[in-house]
Length: 207
Image 1 (cartoon, rainbow, N blue to C red):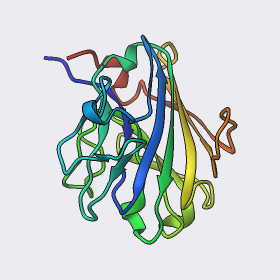
Image 2 (cartoon, one colour):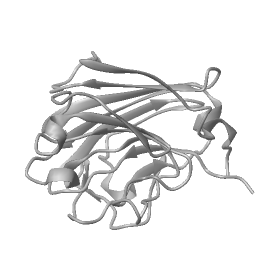
Image 3 (cartoon, rainbow, N blue to C red):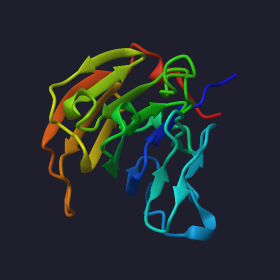
Image 4 (tube, one colour):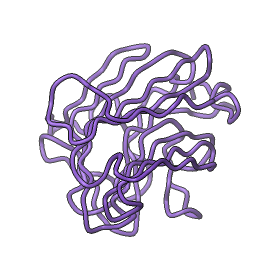
């Protein structure tokens, strides 16, 4: 029996929390702007259990304070190939912890024993937050072990997130472009590569 390892693009709960264009290059390059209303979440994504996202022609919006759900890739071989992934997110204010964003690798299923965060199975993700939760700081979660970075690295507003996975070294790096308004990615904060080999990510294959 094999265990899936998807690219967990995003999960946000809270009013008007949304993501725009997603780009990923691994075994195959894809980009999704959520504009094809008749076929969303698109050919590359599926939704986890939970309330799901809504699509308004230009983004995916996660609403419903008190519950979390996720978009994840249908392909599950991301631990076996080098890739970079970028996504644009809008983090709402006034929702506290329900405005958090989750961006990383794992099964993409909410853990009912830990606030619905995507901690089921092996996982590693970046968790940028709004101004009213941790002062807009960023946390990296590596199989439930958290590393929290200073406040004001993300915060309420629109940001560009990037993730880079090296399948040879089994390391993952995250970065943020704060207050993103378009154009090429230029990191405002970069978080040192984290080791995926110690949490089983490198053993996970296609289902």
